[in-house]
Image (cartoon, rainbow, N blue to C red; front, side, top):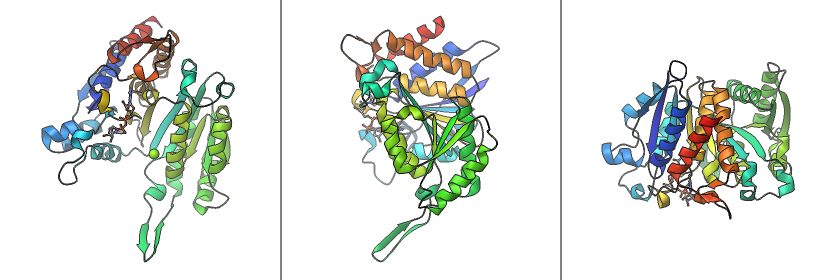
Length: 354
Ligand code: NAI
Ligand code: MG
């Protein structure tokens, strides 16, 4: 029995979480694969009901679960609250509370959605599939900072254990993919990057079946656009990962298609689409649920070791797209426009056929 905490949140959050639950229910096999769902309050909705963006009870339920699935939080309704209460505090509180130090953001361009990419068709080829593994709770975003007269500084600092643990996530993940890791740093200039490179190289010795190469971050930014096919897993520091994961996600164009996973020391993971609460289309059956459904596939793969079922979900999504079904955000001429609910039903229908 896998315990899943559901955090629908605000805006389109509840609309898309509903579709994800349908998909999880379709994966269930009594006595073999079973899920227990607990819905928790977080974000603006939680502020309305309890006065707090992340009530203690919500975090406790998440901590007692095997995985957490979040829709999105926030919206204009909560932009001007008195004091410093904000829905986004729920997001940070959950990430911090769950201790998730590795952020995994796949940039997958389904071949059916080639037009969404700004890249030329000959560069895209059969599609794009790059995974950025970003260190999430260290580096310059958390280093010493300060001001001294007309000077200001931030410090990039990494320790061997911090690099080792993110390296292991990258190598373990690469084993479930195409077995190639590109470590991105600036070791020609930065001492912290030299430690990063040495540590990654050392960890790699435990993964002789995974190919490792190193790349400077400026070159990587260029190579992602020149030839994304050379990459499988990219592992990098917090700041480089922040920038490169945004770059990589734009290669595939569509916000409504991109999932993410954040992992810590245990198998418990935090899963969410990369988009926000889209208040402009909330409750109108217009939101694309595929980013959330693909986040479920990541949950099955990373937290539950249900690799086969994860593959099945991804194949079902590809097949729905292949047959021409589109939500409004990815709509093209001659395709079949469907709403949120219908898109969820279609994925379930195709799953049942696989
Ligand atoms: P957004 O991602 O919510 O929306 C940007 C645009 O993309 C909108 O036009 C929206 O309709 C569209 N869009 C987003 N997701 C979609 C989907 N699944 N299907 C179809 N169209 C989709 O970003 P925005 O407008 O900057 O932020 C809105 C609210 O969401 C803000 O309160 C923001 O703070 C919050 N937010 C929350 C995040 C989270 O919970 N992880 C992440 C980003 C923003
Ligand atoms: Mg960013």
